[in-house]
Length: 111
Image (tube, rainbow, N blue to C red):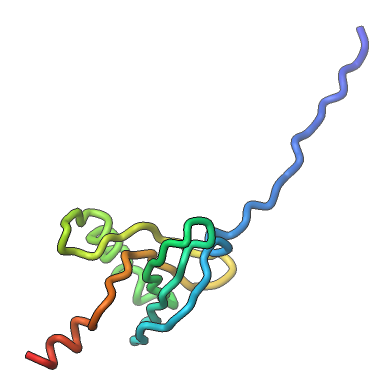
């Protein structure tokens, strides 16, 4: 009986999910981060990307927001698609439906 040589599979580096997205315009900034218009390079679809710089105090709030957003399924509510957290930094990215038009704050000021 001869010895069989075991061939180990080659490791492939998986690209960051954000490698598929390109940002184009800042929609606004807040205490925790900012929101940008991004598009998917593969499909050309546009989304809103809410970027949050994490710190200990925001973790509980973020978990609640994600639980709330992931359960929403209504035509009049912004659709939540996905969340990405890059291990290289403390930034969390929420991918959501892009709603064109005025912000809720701007509409409230006009009333």
